[in-house]
Each structure stands twice: as structure tokens, then as C-alpha cells.
Amino acid sequence: MEKEVRNILTINGGSSSIKFSLYSVNGDLKQQLKGSITRIGLQDAGLTILSQNKNYSRLPAKAHNLQEAAGFLMNWLEKNARVISAKGSQVTVYVIPTDEELMIAKTVSRVLSL
Image (tube, rainbow, N blue to C red; front, top):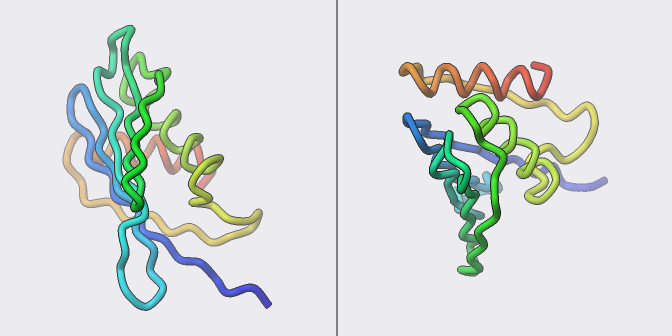
């Protein structure tokens, strides 16, 4: 049987950016990657990723508003960082509310059908 991989995803949203970090929780808490979506609402919005082995990437992001940026981030994480490992995996969302974080958490929850 395959060992369950547990992750914590932290998200901090502001008026024109979203910062995030992904940590594995297998014994020790270890940061796997971190990044941000910046310039939300502008044509040159971008997703920047820095992995644990210091690989750096910058990609264009579809982020006309915070809701679209949150959806873009979750889709990227699901496809590229295996945040959601298998159909039927249990995902728990905890929200520490402030104006933007609450809106982003609600969008993420909606995107993930929670």
C-alpha cells in the first residue's frame, strides 16, 4: 500500500497578489515550493514558483481578478505539484479570515467542490 502524502498549502492574498507555500507533512514540516501570482488585474500577471531545489519559473497567469487568480493557482498546483493526489482524497480547508483571504479560500473551496 502506498504511503499517504500529506501537504499543507498556505495562501496569503492581497489586493494585487497571492503568495503561497506548499509544505509536506511526513514527520517534519518541509517546504516543497513557494511562489506568488503578481500583478493581478493587469495584462502581465504572472505565476512565479521557487521549488525546494531552488528551481525558479515564471509563467504568464490568467488573473484578471482575485477569483480568477485563485482558480488559476489551484489548477496549476493540482496539475503540477500533486496537491490533490487522487480522486476521493480528503482535503480539509481551514480559513483564518481577513477580507481577501476569506474570498480566496471560498473560491478555492468552490474550485475544489468542497
